[in-house]
Length: 101
Image (cartoon, rainbow, N blue to C red; front, side, top):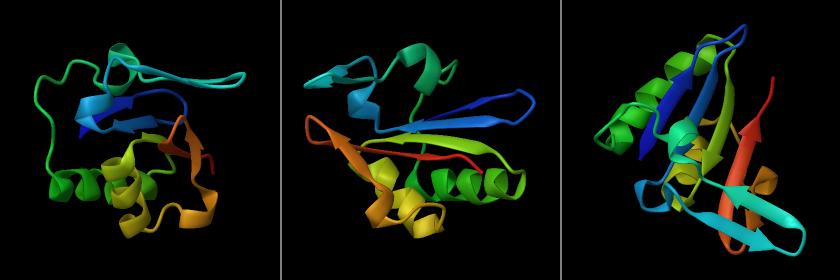
C-alpha cells in the first residue's frame, strides 16, 4: 500500500493499494481516479500493513481526513477502527472510503 500525507490546515492522508496506482475506474456517471501524484506522492516503495496501521492510528489522533482506495487499504482502515464496513462504497468493484471528521 502507498500512503501520502498532504499537509494542509487539516492533513489529508491518501492510502491506496499499490496495484491500483495510476488507474481509473468508471461506473455509470461515477469515476474513481487513483492518481499517482495524490496517492503515491514521492514515495517509491509500498508500505507494509503494520506500517500503514501505525500511520492511520497516528494521523487519526491528529484529526486528519482520509481517502482510502482498494481492498487491502480499506481492510486496514476497518481494522484501525476509522471506518466501518457499512460506510464503504464501490466503483467498478473497487472499494473506497473517506473519513471527514
